[in-house]
Image 1 (cartoon, rainbow, N blue to C red):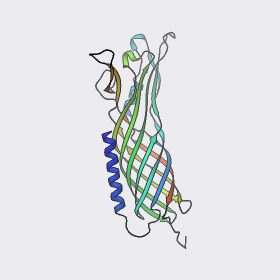
Image 2: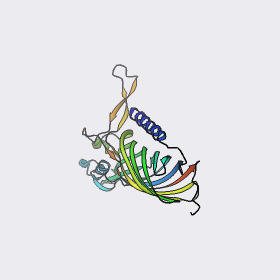
Image 3: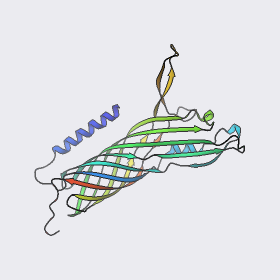
Length: 271
């Protein structure tokens, strides 16, 4: 919560500073809002992939790993608020929600009576970012832009060992939460469909490692067995004190619809 409050405060301060830099006179497409969707690849998500690659159930009872699927990436959608202090300088505060991604494995046994065992890692995240952008106005209805800035990530994690595999891999973990600061940079193009509506296409890279997840378990009070309380625990690799990590870093593409408010552009007479 403290980290979340910090990023909100920093974003507010930076936004106020950006507003104070605005110069007198009309700036085309100064205020706007963007709705977008896209897809991001997770290019270095080592821990979830390693967990399922190494999953073999309880080896002492004859289980062997049958198949696994690695983490790949996720669809995302979000919204941004746009503001320009110059025709070629813009700022945005945005929020994205990432869909669920997973890595899964199945361990099988020659004896069908024993059934299969499963190892699964599920995770999803949200992204809050502040970015500065530089615009090249190629034509009155078309520009290209590049920019980036700090980002804050909040993620949830489920780590499951099912079918009896929990004996070796530990109890399943549900609802673990992690937070981390990172960075998001992008380059894109914007085509105006009307005076106030444009289509944006962009791609970029985000740096978003989350190296610590915390969850809560019910613990019985040592002095009064009728009282239970919640105790915070860190998600570790099975039988180690190496924290389980999720890395959302990677390339992404996105398509957005931008809507601008007054003042909007007055197209040049020779347009």
